[in-house]
Length: 262
Image 1 (cartoon, one colour):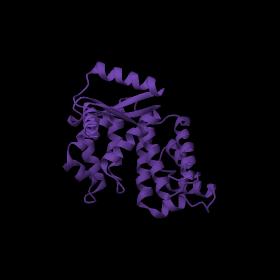
Image 2: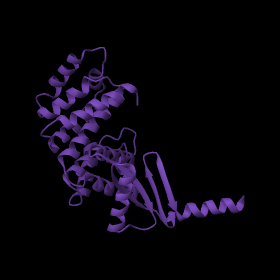
Image 3: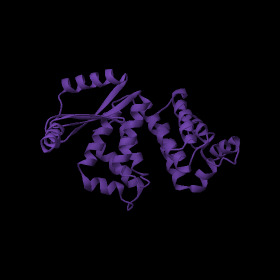
Image 4: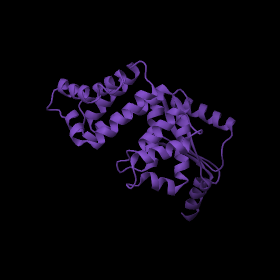
């Protein structure tokens, strides 16, 4: 990610918090815009052409999206196009990020944990991941498949995000798309994600205690992505940002074997 994109993301992210009346319809329109931009190099190129004035790029947004989308959607797109982006791909990804953030604001439910559930389902089903990530098949059909799979299992926000992002993989694996979406939702809600590998599921008390401990240690709210992994034997392994806390029996046994071998 270039420095221009880093600065542009700060401005577009801030715009979410300054926009009143965000709804899932607005989030859905932003996802539609992201797909349109990805499918039309001419349009996305025109909106990221730094040789054109910000006013000219703003006018393109009005001409293309103004009559079709809600005022909040158009306003967020205008904020995005007046920024300088390091690449067209960065700009398209930013519009998708705006959509995910808008959905996180519009749906006050447990979107992160519902997306974690989708992630775990995909990880446990290689055939499903292959079908969703394949270049064969219509994008809309993949989105509809995910929406059907989540019917009754997730709220509207998680369903919208999951069904939308699989329609625009752009050489990325479905799990990568979901992990990115979870990080964005957590960021919008002022949290960080901790991926925790355990040998057996944690009960509610253990989850709450671990959440409180990590939140206190890092000085911010933490969302847990719990993965049951028998190879850890016992204990747990925590990955949060660049930090790794390995308190597993497997790692202790490995250390012991190395000491004995030495």
